[in-house]
Length: 317
Ligand code: ASP
Image (cartoon, rainbow, N blue to C red; front, side):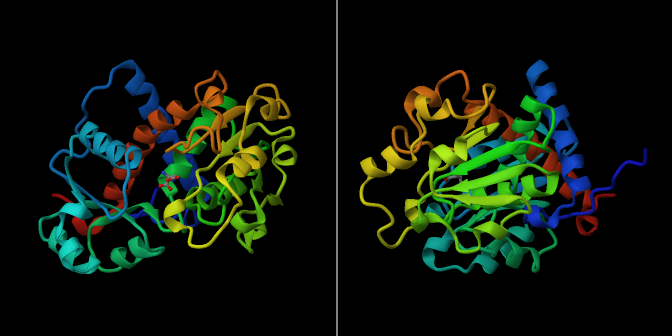
């Protein structure tokens, strides 16, 4: 079999990736995952390379796992957070990036509140750009780590039913997952109150259905993925009260009984315990939340490695 060649120097969205690309990055990540469980040792695939994390929004898991991933591959990793950078003095995004480019950054990992910001940057730099979440648009490495977690549990990404529940309209995680799972042939059920559902929800992914009743969405599902209300992006009233929301759209043990017997519970974090997810479930046997985080390092190693290798503009001799 001819090995598929990864040709993307940037990772901007799941929408840009073919099924073969998904297979390539997930296979590499899967091997990283196994390797790390055996012996988390430092490799040298990115020795001499510089990865800069540029985060305009807060992050715990994504930023630290990109840092661990880069270091595990032998790269030098630098973290910039906006509150302590010159962006707080009025510097533009492009100026910031241009300055980092002349420091010979090979890759920049960008999280920004504006949808499309990483695409804009990618058009103006030689470095590889990896999108670490842009506004309400996409969060490609989150969808990849979710896919890796699901595949390790079920051995496949096709023929499954995945319920994604909560604040769909503001969630880049929901969008990236719906697109990915649609490409690999699983059914996606998006569920949430009408005020948190995008008008074009049905079009997100090839196999998506829309639900406003949580029990209906969970019924017979293999995977139930719960999402946090994205308060940082919510401008008007979207629910009567938090208590009302958790009663109607919060996942608890009783509700999970409607899912398949082997169903798993996922959450990208941070969890608002007791709001979208009951705390016993979050810590229970069906929860794979910490495995998702573990998969995050494996996926980000694969993504950095593949994108930098595909970037001819920064080739080292
Ligand atoms: N950490 C994820 C994101 O950055 C999910 C969330 O914040 O709720 O989109």
